[in-house]
Image (cartoon, rainbow, N blue to C red; front, side, top):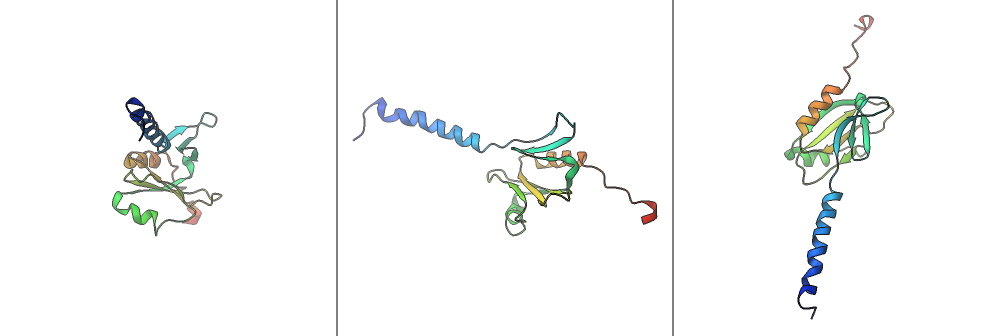
Amino acid sequence: MGYPGVRAWLPYLIVLPVVVALLLALGRIKVEVRDTGESGEPELWVGDAHLPLRFVGEVDVIDRDRKRKALGPELDPAAFVVHRGWVGPVLRIHLTDPADPTPYWVISTRRPEQLAGLLREHRPAPPEPRPDQA
């Protein structure tokens, strides 16, 4: 019934760490704000998806307790979602691009307050009303 000695436990010693490393690598998504080289415009990058910060509207931090509702009944089917179940809070970023059919992004992040502050800092100010419209 099986091989005795080293041949019995050697596959576990090799395969299990490889599987754990593979799962960790696949579950790792980089979330960052960076300047693009050509235009110099800052962008939010979530994995391979990117969003110019000029299209960032309202930013909501959704804590662990409200996350189920935000990802369930309140979720718009057209939203861009990058959710990792083991990360507690999520960030909802509303878009202001009229040409984009995506209403908002929902992303998991370990530091939502820091990212929300950075996005709010870089978003453009709303246009001031003209005197003739007042």
